[in-house]
Image (cartoon, rainbow, N blue to C red; front, side):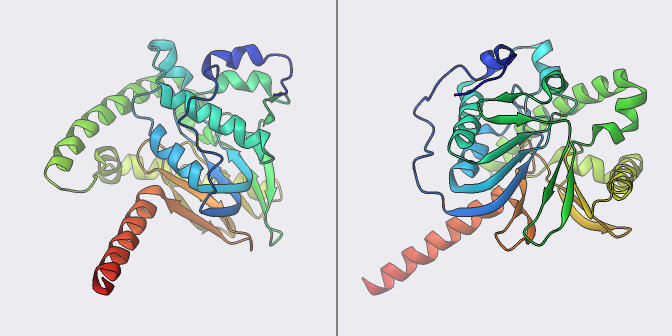
Length: 291
């Protein structure tokens, strides 16, 4: 593993070695030209590390962009939480880079400590403040986490910390609620997404953020932008600029992918699992008919 000066700051996050949970040697089912993921929030109870590991196991790519808030330094400063699955995610990413995937880490506000290492490489993962990806069709995409376009983060960071604590409380309530729904045979339901959808100020905040990020992409001369930060997967055109938000791995469990032909798509892990389950059920029915 190659490391530039400063790698010791990451040792406590990735020092577990291979644990047996990593199945990188198994052939992935789908290969993309590029995968964009953000807002994993390793170090929090809400992080869906097992689902992310399964996603990475089945989806390989030539490029992998980590678009901020990969590690939640805010929560880790309050309370240390680092189960084995979170270590496995770090090891998976390091191994993916060692095997030739071009992995770029663009830090966000929750892992802003990594901005002090911009320009360094950690285990073949390059840390950049922002970057540009050109699709197979020649579309120039500016890649940034997006927190610099969040007025709360920039003007009242203390309020962002309060909001972060409130979000963590909502997630804890959400886990308890969905545990009960699962026992009742009901599908997953997001309390926080429901509340965001009902509060007009939250909707205005999302719209303002999307427009601001898209305008900056236009100002920089790019055809589109890929960001994270607001935990809302979206792909749409805003004033002629392609706005892409890859969502998160706390609730939506989503990623933005570029197919080999340059086509961009937002995919959801839950949908992929459901499709696979349906395919297996059809296969079992077919085998039963022919038995």
